[in-house]
Image (cartoon, rainbow, N blue to C red; front, top):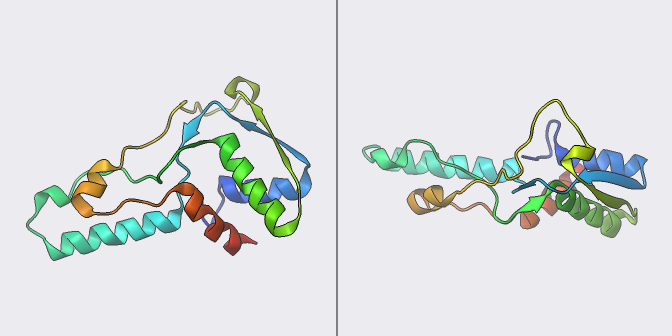
Length: 142
């Protein structure tokens, strides 16, 4: 999850890209980087649907909500660095590393993608592809 607000991976990459020429980023963990702005839109859609049809029990429950597409952390970082190069002329190289090369106290899954099909079928909301949402968030951070 990334956004123009709070601490998150996209903001960290922008900061580090301003300080370093090479970023070492994990490339063996895949997910779907999701904009908090898109999640907010999805939550509002769900709320409107539930309020408009309060007797529909199937509109309630557990729903996954994740961006379309997938990326490793390194691919996500590289996309941010590509935006930075195009927008500000700053070139930063993303060096792909393994999880073993970057040990952290928290264990991360190799695949953290979510299936948002139930949300799409019952609420008619499908989050945009992560690459489509990223530039708008980065523009707000620039």
